[in-house]
Image (cartoon, rainbow, N blue to C red; front, side, top):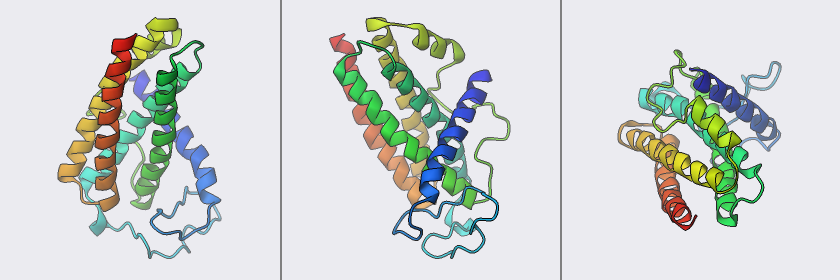
Length: 209
């Protein structure tokens, strides 16, 4: 679908731009994943495998599927948040929420991209179908959000994002129940906790419009 391909492109751009900053950080810091974004001539092959070696024994197909689906899912949330933040006159609570979504989910895209790169698997699903990415907004919905103004835009964003978050929670719960990679399972728990709280907040904001 066009929406899925567009969102995958956004995810790739986000991961690439964030990766530039990540590669400039001090290597070997604590629990962070070694970030090699495939730049030729870098130290990808010479980095020590130690603190977090992503071998086949560390993860399973559920972890791969979770990351491959959640990257474009997060990318669309970042895109939608950017759309609403560009509109004038939005309620302060809504803009604070959209800012928080962008701040949380963009780095998680980089994190999941790093896992998939370390596992030597594609960062996107082979068929690009978006199958299983519950809560994704279609082209018409994104276009409607882009063109909406005022209270209509605020209401539409909240309604779309509530469904989007519910889809992310479903995917995260699947990872919690079936995943093996500890950091991916932890991210699943973090997504459930954070996005459930945001759903509650969004319902309150929606009722106040």
